[in-house]
Image (tube, rainbow, N blue to C red; front, side, top):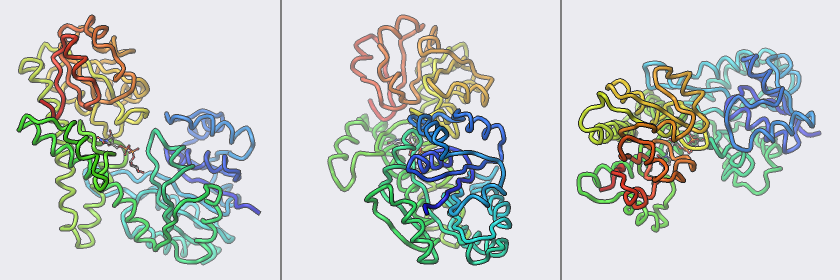
Length: 437
Ligand code: UDX
């Protein structure tokens, strides 16, 4: 009999995992403590923006394979395999990750587990968490050792969540028993030929943080080169292209610009440093401090460039901002470099109007003090400076003439090296970009 799956926590990761597993043919029950979210999900309404996910969600609901609940009792009775996908945000005022939602899930579920099952952590956690949670589960579960913990980190990217879930490049399993490995191999069998790395808890937890640390380092490396290019009057875009032809380096995650944000990379590298410190291995990760600092300096540099174009001060200056999401194809504004820059310019006296194709609602809620436009043209109307901060295709495709007709002065800073500099310059724009002459 195929396993019945539950997914605890319905954020970007949990909703996608639940809907995709139902699409693969499993009976899936999703849980969240947010009743309003559960009501919306059961009605087929996505509380997040994720391309391609809504049809998968609807298919699951219509086939009866997928349901959502707020009841841990229901989840415990239903599931053979419980995936835990709750958030692990950065602690307020600290680098460390807040794993209290993870503990909360185990504390709620554990006492209800009275038969053989597998609890599978998917969230990104500090190394050592799985071992601690396994002890907790063993203490709480009436089923004893029959209710077992495994760790299965998730690598999906927002904007590509469905694709990454159904076609993962690898599956990492941190397990203590052959039974746990066997169950998870069966669960993922419908995905076809995917490389498996089967290991212990600690290694599985570390794979995820190491992957994100590497990606962050790659972005900050090219952004450090951008700083040098700015000083040396060189062009980081061409530099990056030339590096990309070296297979050992590769071109992905080598786009210089405003740097990384979002709910993962920034907090994960900080939590990684904090955990290494606790383990007495902080020296190994001091370079991540630099990775973080380079990343944050890009935001400051962007504000400086904008101020320079504004004539030295933002007072009396209207700034049109294109982009609020931390990256294109997402409505996520968590630690968004774009919004950070917009807010800073507002604090420095600029009149800022922001437009984003999808993230406008979230941005408005978080920063009611900014102005918002309903289109790119509306956001830049009367602007003395235009800033491109998130590289949505809609912005890349903008016509410099059409935009030029509504701004006060044709000045633009391309924060993502996404525009065709020549096309904008020949339309009479003063075009500047990060890391380029
Ligand atoms: C990331 C990891 O890629 C994913 O594997 C992990 O599971 C969660 O964290 P995500 O946060 O969705 O995924 O975004 P990602 O596509 O990795 O982009 C992160 C940030 O880096 C964005 O702000 C993006 O704009 C920026 N970025 C990316 C660059 O500045 N330059 C690049 O070349 C690539």
